[in-house]
Length: 490
Image (cartoon, rainbow, N blue to C red):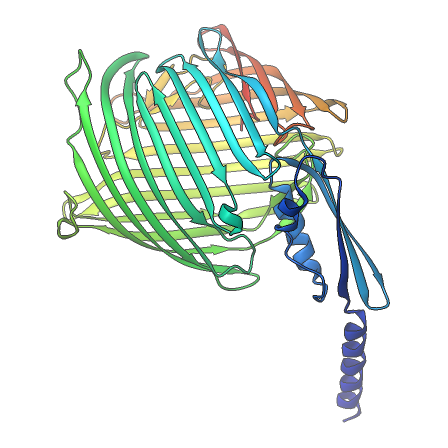
């Protein structure tokens, strides 16, 4: 009996202590923004004056603000006194407006262009990008992209894209509302897309098929979210897709035209767990590393009674467990399965399995390893997997290997040499191994490449872009390949 009374008294005293520690938000001050309007930052805050202080809301606000491309450092400071809390939101504006070249590829097959962009249009947090591009394969194109993440001050986002090129067009329009907080119960969206392009397929680096692919699609989705430590998110998706195919001059093959109306029901499970890190996936930027496991399962139906040209059941599954195997070591696994099923069997089977490990060494250096396997089975079209410098195997031409199976492994040491408030200079020593094959036609044969590269991160520029250059030696072809692009190789 005395133990029960003692426990009850301890509980009351603890409750009084908790109650005494509660604070009411008195003042909120925003500092550091020179180009971004204060109301743009204000609308992202998940707390306001007069409310009780909730530190989890403060941490989530920090994460949301760091996701904005035009903001760099974000620090929310809290001062408590006499049951009141004064909050100071310190931010750093990045250079969000630029006229910059767009370069990718390797020396024998160079794609280039010019991008004029503003990730913080008129200080309102809107995005405008105008791109002129020359692709080594598809030729010249121009694109205008506009995004308003807070349409008329709401939580809805409007995104538009208009692209025209020598080989087709790309028109997109979407209106969405995402899970803007962990407690948001609903997310939904609608999108309209029209795309025309030339599809190419290769055999032993030679062009074997080429045809026009015109796709018009309409999508609508609704997600519901419940739970706290484990998010349970059932969802429904409606997809209407019209595709028309035409062989190009000199070729005779093209898939048959099709119309698909697919009704999908799914369930997503996710553990919302984050850690603040630097020099893990980015290069110097403070990132909210998502270390919570997640996965989803979806089942869809296509039927002629709905207007489709073919009856089938669609299934897809993704499992993405994430592990922290020591203080600065992480392992991200992923397994994705997708297929369409009919009474006569399945088609369009696709499997992807991957492992990514990231280990931080002495705070500023990283050791990264990736292992990935992709496979097509009984494809409805001539789907293939290419392997080369821009698809997992540096040191070889972009389409050096092809098949319906692909296996790649990459090991990369990423030392940091010099840190400056405006830029970070880093390097890369890497080893790549890969193969692509088609069962019954070719056999897998591992190909090896090794090399080194440089990485430059511009820490005061929108999204802290990483300029990447690599020089690799392909042991099979006994040749060097130079390549450059944006971002880490993997």
